[in-house]
Length: 305
Image (cartoon, rainbow, N blue to C red; front, top):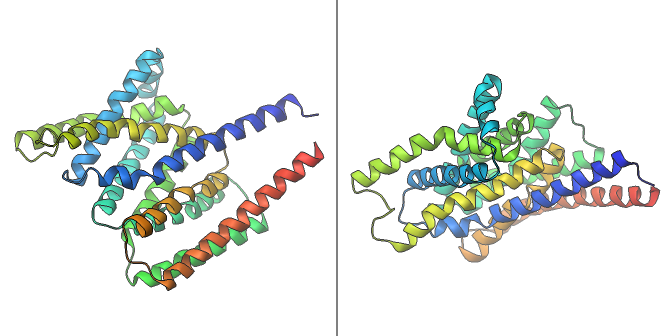
């Protein structure tokens, strides 16, 4: 029989997997949502994401009577500095991703989020003392080979992919070590940038350069909705990151780039040749090795119990 401690750990891990699956599936569908925001500049869209996320999350905090927790974060200098760092990282990630979608580089966003799990594994090894089995190491090497091959196929530095990978990988690390729950941490992050975001939105409106309230009912509806669409998967991700090893987070992260890949090739018809397909096959082989070992370990534990 399982001990209470083992059962609690299994439940925590299971919750983490569910939260992670939800987050990455929604993120994988983001190109569809942000393609619909064509007509607004990337920086304006990011400012709306920040401001409306802050509004939505603040309402949740009020409904749950958690204002005291917000005050405690602002009183803790070390924690606040950590969240300032994570705030800048996620804002950078949002901006570059929206730019990629608008200029037709969804395949590069796919590459960037394929790189991210590799960086997550490296960060877990360097800073958290996490270790990988031989099969996990093989899966990482296969994925790395695919990423390097894709970089060669592009024939240029894939800066969009690299910035997306670095910003989100480091964001995950900072949020894992930050001693604050998902709702409070994310609320503080958006509140830190909300005044700047609102100021820029008002400036665009005053200059008659805004997509918002500029005569497009579609933008008037979707730009405020971007706050809710942004906040929900991020809350799921942060909850998953605090329940799972970074290596497991790294595996789940492949859901998002796989969906981006399918959208780029099948829906948006971005250029994609057989050589690039071969590179992606390396990455998918790595996923097969990683998931195969995870399944084998899960069945072994079940048999032992």
